[in-house]
Amino acid sequence: MENASGKKISSSKLEATLVSTFPRICGDCAKLMNKQVFLTNPALQSTTLGDFFSKVDTDYMIAKLAIEEFYDGEMYLIFTLKNAITVGSIILALDDATVRENAKKGILDNDGMDAFREFSNQVCGMLDNELRPKLPKPIHLRLTTTSLINREKANSVLSDEVLHEECLILTATLRILGFDDDQFILSLSKLVGEEFFAEVIEENDKQTKATILVVDDSNTDLRIVRKLLSSEYRVMVTDHPNNALSMIQKNHIDLVLMDICMPVVDGITLCERIKRNCMSNKIPIIICSSSPTRDNVINSIRAGAVDFIAKPFTRQKLIEKIDKHLVNRGGLIASR
Image (tube, rainbow, N blue to C red; front, side, top):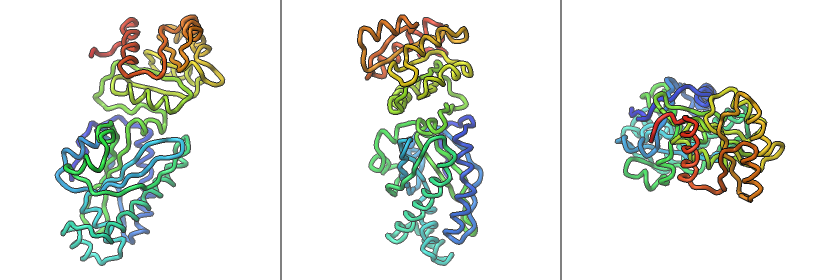
């Protein structure tokens, strides 16, 4: 069996939550296939799907699950072709000898493809039922496509963005009693995975320049900023301004980036509160807004912000401003 060829990451709520779905998946799959099913030896790694498929020399079946409701993104179920044929043949209620023969031949016919799609749809429903009560905000998973994929076909099956985006790959040993062990692989974007519990999932050996706290009531803008900054910094986010002070007190924060227009507590007021607190008044604050009026800029600086940036901003412009104030504070962890 191939490995995910990624970097091991520290334990996280996401990993624990995904692994906690295994008993339900095994139980429901056993009923579906009338076979005993086990998932063991889970491991979570950080890599890209492009890197993963570039290092494998076998065919896979990949099932794309759309992540909907509060969260937005995709999750992928990945099975070796041999495993997909085995599962599909079992779903078709073929006898064990025929199942093994089909897997040995490595040919997935139309009936087998339909059966594998139905299996993927059932696993999608199992994950949906298990994750919905365990995540802090509403989620819905929906199967959209199933495709054959390998090193040569990766670029035609997945977009460049999906192939090169940092992702989390959970691998486990899949055992269907009476058949050879294989792999169960689940992949999702690292940014989406971190968004589930508003946590930062770090590689064990990864070094970043600093920790940035982003405060914005727009979850879309939070996703954009995390995507722009996550390769350079440890990024923490909150869409509730009232949580910002608590997060600053519980974590080492090197810089705060906040929106100016937020309900309940606006950016100017929050900036003033942070600057009045002796535990946080040395932290540089950059305020951003899609309305960069003269009054907004002046009021931001008067409240204690070190800088102001207009939305939308480019990655280069944002990093330049952040690095400038981290250097002034002596907060850079590592040089470029």
